[in-house]
Length: 112
Image 1 (cartoon, one colour):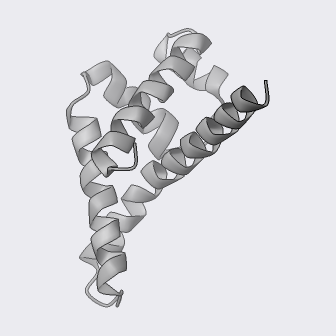
Image 2 (image 1 turned 45 degrees about the horizontal axis):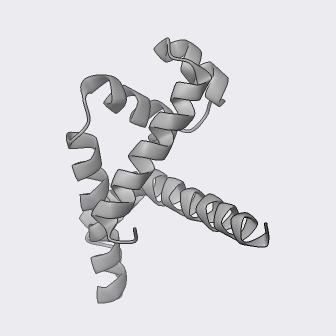
């Protein structure tokens, strides 16, 4: 019983981390391209990895899921229900797609 709670908590925190990093990829890309911003080499390398993983994730998805990624993970201003209604998908599909996209992103990033 306690083990399954720990696994669920770990999965929830990993999902939250990946979702935030995916959303920050747009800002990381702008930081990398701005020559006036100085970063440590490790920070620049990590940000480059995040941006590359986000681009690979988007590029390997069909068009319908690319629209979902932009709505749900990049421009996060709506609820799951509103995004589902906009894309004409069920709320359950929204959560399944989010889980799938974040797993692929995590694999490309090298954390899963």
